[in-house]
Structure formats: C-alpha cells, structure tokens
Amino acid sequence: MNAIEILKNNGELIRDRYGVKRIGIFGSFARGQGNDNSDVDVLVEFREDSENFDNYIEL
Image (tube, rainbow, N blue to C red; front, side, top):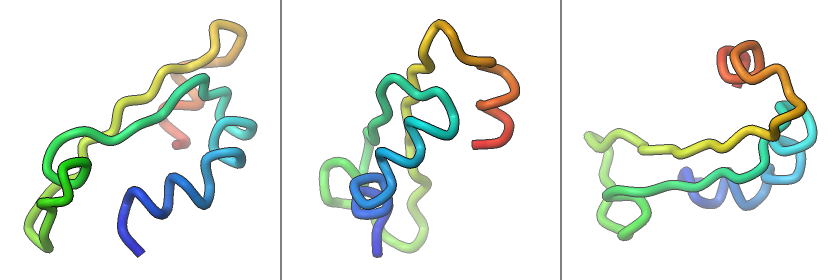
C-alpha cells in the first residue's frame, strides 16, 4: 500500500483524531513517480479549534 492509498483509506480517521482540516501529498508520490528511495511530502492544514502543535507531533 502506498502513501496515497493510506491517506485515502484513513483520511476520515486522521481528520477526526488529529483535528485535520485538509491533508494531501505533493512531490514524486503525487506524480506517481515515487520509489523506495523517495520521501513522502505531506501537507497538513489543521482546524483552527484544534491543538495544532500537539496534534502535529502525534500525527
């Protein structure tokens, strides 16, 4: 399972548990060019009412 599939399969859980408004992937994995040596670039926008720093660290 790749990073995009993990986010799709767990998106609702991640949003609810960590106060995430939006989450997405950019870079090589988003373009379908990721490989075993690639990092995963993730952009997370937290809801204003969440404890952003604590949720960021836990996520």
